[in-house]
Length: 220
Image 1 (cartoon, rainbow, N blue to C red):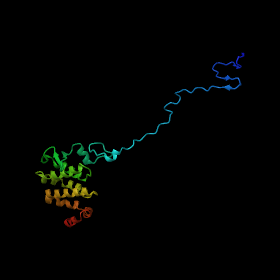
Image 2: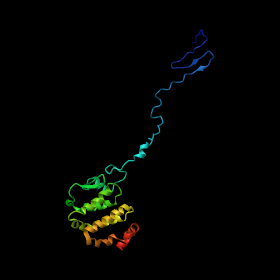
Image 3: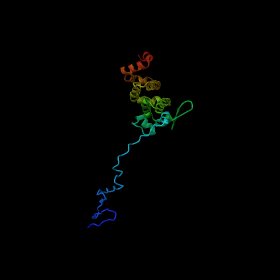
Image 4: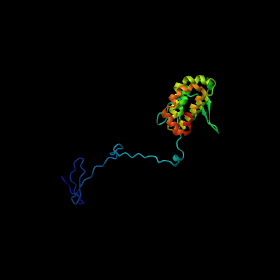
Protein backbone atom coordinates (compact mmCIF):
# COMPACT_ATOMS: atom_id res chain seq x y z
CA UNK A 1 0.00 0.00 0.00
CA UNK A 2 1.36 3.45 -0.99
CA UNK A 3 0.99 6.81 0.63
CA UNK A 4 1.23 10.28 -0.87
CA UNK A 5 4.23 12.40 -0.03
CA UNK A 6 3.70 16.13 0.32
CA UNK A 7 6.73 16.92 -1.86
CA UNK A 8 5.53 14.75 -4.75
CA UNK A 9 8.05 11.96 -4.14
CA UNK A 10 6.58 8.52 -4.05
CA UNK A 11 8.25 5.87 -2.01
CA UNK A 12 7.44 2.34 -2.89
CA UNK A 13 7.30 -0.43 -0.42
CA UNK A 14 10.84 -1.71 0.16
CA UNK A 15 11.57 -5.13 1.29
CA UNK A 16 14.27 -5.98 3.73
CA UNK A 17 17.77 -5.30 2.35
CA UNK A 18 16.49 -3.34 -0.69
CA UNK A 19 18.52 -0.29 -1.72
CA UNK A 20 16.30 0.92 -4.63
CA UNK A 21 14.98 4.52 -4.60
CA UNK A 22 12.64 6.19 -7.09
CA UNK A 23 12.95 9.92 -7.71
CA UNK A 24 10.20 12.26 -8.80
CA UNK A 25 11.16 11.73 -12.46
CA UNK A 26 10.82 8.00 -12.07
CA UNK A 27 14.52 7.25 -12.49
CA UNK A 28 15.60 4.37 -10.38
CA UNK A 29 18.92 4.78 -8.57
CA UNK A 30 20.85 1.80 -7.29
CA UNK A 31 23.60 2.07 -4.74
CA UNK A 32 26.57 -0.09 -5.50
CA UNK A 33 27.91 -2.24 -2.75
CA UNK A 34 30.84 -0.78 -0.88
CA UNK A 35 34.09 -2.59 -1.56
CA UNK A 36 35.72 -3.70 1.66
CA UNK A 37 38.96 -1.85 2.33
CA UNK A 38 40.97 -4.99 2.85
CA UNK A 39 39.89 -6.69 -0.39
CA UNK A 40 43.26 -6.27 -2.14
CA UNK A 41 45.68 -8.01 0.15
CA UNK A 42 49.42 -7.62 -0.02
CA UNK A 43 49.68 -11.14 -1.42
CA UNK A 44 47.57 -10.21 -4.46
CA UNK A 45 49.47 -6.99 -5.12
CA UNK A 46 52.23 -7.24 -7.78
CA UNK A 47 55.70 -7.60 -6.24
CA UNK A 48 57.99 -4.62 -6.42
CA UNK A 49 61.10 -5.09 -8.54
CA UNK A 50 64.30 -5.66 -6.56
CA UNK A 51 66.49 -2.61 -6.40
CA UNK A 52 70.16 -3.11 -7.12
CA UNK A 53 72.56 -1.04 -5.05
CA UNK A 54 74.41 1.56 -7.06
CA UNK A 55 78.23 1.12 -7.11
CA UNK A 56 80.08 3.62 -5.02
CA UNK A 57 83.00 5.62 -6.45
CA UNK A 58 85.20 4.30 -3.64
CA UNK A 59 84.74 0.72 -4.89
CA UNK A 60 86.93 1.52 -7.89
CA UNK A 61 89.54 3.36 -5.84
CA UNK A 62 89.70 0.75 -3.06
CA UNK A 63 89.34 -2.75 -4.54
CA UNK A 64 88.92 -5.67 -2.18
CA UNK A 65 92.16 -7.32 -1.18
CA UNK A 66 92.59 -11.07 -1.11
CA UNK A 67 92.39 -12.57 2.36
CA UNK A 68 94.29 -15.89 2.34
CA UNK A 69 92.46 -16.98 5.48
CA UNK A 70 88.97 -16.08 4.32
CA UNK A 71 86.50 -17.92 2.15
CA UNK A 72 87.39 -17.87 -1.50
CA UNK A 73 85.17 -18.26 -4.54
CA UNK A 74 87.18 -21.30 -5.58
CA UNK A 75 88.96 -24.00 -3.66
CA UNK A 76 92.45 -23.00 -2.50
CA UNK A 77 95.53 -24.85 -3.69
CA UNK A 78 97.10 -27.58 -1.59
CA UNK A 79 99.89 -25.30 -0.39
CA UNK A 80 97.50 -22.46 0.46
CA UNK A 81 95.28 -24.84 2.43
CA UNK A 82 98.23 -26.22 4.40
CA UNK A 83 99.61 -22.74 5.09
CA UNK A 84 96.26 -21.38 6.29
CA UNK A 85 95.90 -24.31 8.71
CA UNK A 86 99.35 -23.74 10.20
CA UNK A 87 101.00 -26.67 8.44
CA UNK A 88 104.02 -24.53 7.47
CA UNK A 89 105.93 -23.73 10.69
CA UNK A 90 106.88 -20.20 9.65
CA UNK A 91 105.21 -16.88 9.07
CA UNK A 92 105.91 -13.89 6.88
CA UNK A 93 107.23 -10.79 8.66
CA UNK A 94 106.72 -7.59 6.68
CA UNK A 95 109.77 -5.35 7.00
CA UNK A 96 110.24 -1.75 5.99
CA UNK A 97 112.89 -2.73 3.43
CA UNK A 98 112.34 -6.43 2.74
CA UNK A 99 110.31 -9.34 4.04
CA UNK A 100 111.62 -12.24 6.08
CA UNK A 101 110.43 -15.48 7.59
CA UNK A 102 110.00 -16.17 11.26
CA UNK A 103 110.20 -19.86 12.13
CA UNK A 104 108.22 -21.25 15.03
CA UNK A 105 111.19 -23.45 15.94
CA UNK A 106 114.78 -23.71 14.65
CA UNK A 107 114.71 -24.96 11.03
CA UNK A 108 117.45 -27.51 11.73
CA UNK A 109 115.09 -29.33 14.09
CA UNK A 110 112.32 -29.68 11.49
CA UNK A 111 111.86 -32.87 9.47
CA UNK A 112 112.44 -32.42 5.75
CA UNK A 113 109.76 -34.96 4.97
CA UNK A 114 107.25 -33.64 4.00
CA UNK A 115 108.10 -29.98 4.70
CA UNK A 116 110.70 -29.57 1.94
CA UNK A 117 108.39 -31.20 -0.61
CA UNK A 118 105.48 -29.01 0.47
CA UNK A 119 107.60 -25.88 0.05
CA UNK A 120 108.69 -27.08 -3.39
CA UNK A 121 105.03 -27.51 -4.37
CA UNK A 122 104.42 -23.92 -3.25
CA UNK A 123 106.88 -22.67 -5.88
CA UNK A 124 104.00 -22.84 -8.37
CA UNK A 125 101.89 -20.37 -6.41
CA UNK A 126 101.17 -17.02 -8.03
CA UNK A 127 99.70 -15.06 -5.11
CA UNK A 128 101.27 -13.34 -2.12
CA UNK A 129 102.24 -14.42 0.54
CA UNK A 130 102.50 -17.98 -0.78
CA UNK A 131 105.08 -17.05 -3.39
CA UNK A 132 107.52 -15.58 -0.86
CA UNK A 133 106.95 -18.20 1.84
CA UNK A 134 107.58 -21.14 -0.49
CA UNK A 135 110.63 -19.61 -2.17
CA UNK A 136 112.34 -18.35 0.99
CA UNK A 137 111.32 -21.35 3.08
CA UNK A 138 112.80 -23.77 0.54
CA UNK A 139 116.05 -21.81 0.43
CA UNK A 140 116.44 -21.45 4.20
CA UNK A 141 115.64 -25.09 4.86
CA UNK A 142 118.43 -26.21 2.54
CA UNK A 143 120.91 -24.02 4.47
CA UNK A 144 120.56 -25.84 7.79
CA UNK A 145 123.15 -28.22 9.15
CA UNK A 146 122.67 -31.75 7.86
CA UNK A 147 120.60 -30.64 4.86
CA UNK A 148 122.43 -32.89 2.32
CA UNK A 149 121.66 -36.04 4.30
CA UNK A 150 118.02 -35.02 4.78
CA UNK A 151 117.36 -33.82 1.21
CA UNK A 152 119.03 -36.61 -0.79
CA UNK A 153 116.49 -39.35 0.07
CA UNK A 154 113.70 -36.99 -1.09
CA UNK A 155 115.09 -36.44 -4.60
CA UNK A 156 112.71 -38.92 -6.32
CA UNK A 157 109.79 -36.87 -4.97
CA UNK A 158 111.38 -33.42 -5.28
CA UNK A 159 112.43 -33.68 -8.92
CA UNK A 160 108.88 -34.06 -10.38
CA UNK A 161 107.67 -31.10 -8.30
CA UNK A 162 110.50 -28.84 -9.48
CA UNK A 163 109.95 -30.05 -13.03
CA UNK A 164 106.33 -28.89 -12.81
CA UNK A 165 107.52 -25.43 -11.78
CA UNK A 166 109.94 -25.32 -14.72
CA UNK A 167 107.10 -26.15 -17.08
CA UNK A 168 104.76 -23.47 -15.72
CA UNK A 169 103.52 -20.76 -18.10
CA UNK A 170 104.21 -17.99 -15.58
CA UNK A 171 107.75 -16.61 -15.93
CA UNK A 172 108.09 -15.90 -12.21
CA UNK A 173 107.13 -19.48 -11.35
CA UNK A 174 109.71 -20.73 -13.84
CA UNK A 175 112.35 -18.51 -12.26
CA UNK A 176 111.57 -19.80 -8.78
CA UNK A 177 111.75 -23.37 -10.01
CA UNK A 178 115.10 -22.75 -11.70
CA UNK A 179 116.55 -21.13 -8.58
CA UNK A 180 115.29 -24.02 -6.45
CA UNK A 181 116.99 -26.50 -8.80
CA UNK A 182 120.30 -24.62 -8.53
CA UNK A 183 120.00 -24.51 -4.72
CA UNK A 184 119.17 -28.20 -4.53
CA UNK A 185 122.07 -29.07 -6.81
CA UNK A 186 124.46 -27.12 -4.57
CA UNK A 187 123.30 -29.11 -1.54
CA UNK A 188 123.07 -32.69 -2.81
CA UNK A 189 125.84 -32.38 -5.44
CA UNK A 190 126.38 -35.39 -7.76
CA UNK A 191 123.41 -37.21 -6.21
CA UNK A 192 121.18 -35.14 -8.50
CA UNK A 193 122.82 -36.47 -11.70
CA UNK A 194 120.78 -39.67 -11.74
CA UNK A 195 117.57 -37.63 -11.77
CA UNK A 196 118.51 -35.16 -14.51
CA UNK A 197 117.19 -37.46 -17.24
CA UNK A 198 113.74 -37.20 -15.66
CA UNK A 199 114.06 -33.49 -15.04
CA UNK A 200 115.56 -32.23 -18.30
CA UNK A 201 113.33 -33.96 -20.83
CA UNK A 202 112.88 -32.71 -24.38
CA UNK A 203 109.77 -30.78 -23.36
CA UNK A 204 111.51 -29.18 -20.41
CA UNK A 205 114.48 -28.19 -22.54
CA UNK A 206 112.20 -26.53 -25.09
CA UNK A 207 110.59 -24.46 -22.33
CA UNK A 208 113.97 -23.53 -20.87
CA UNK A 209 115.30 -22.51 -24.29
CA UNK A 210 112.26 -20.33 -24.94
CA UNK A 211 112.50 -18.57 -21.57
CA UNK A 212 116.27 -18.31 -21.11
CA UNK A 213 118.16 -18.56 -24.42
CA UNK A 214 121.57 -18.45 -22.73
CA UNK A 215 120.73 -21.42 -20.50
CA UNK A 216 120.76 -23.91 -23.40
CA UNK A 217 124.52 -23.44 -23.85
CA UNK A 218 125.02 -24.59 -20.25
CA UNK A 219 122.80 -27.66 -20.20
CA UNK A 220 123.35 -28.89 -23.80
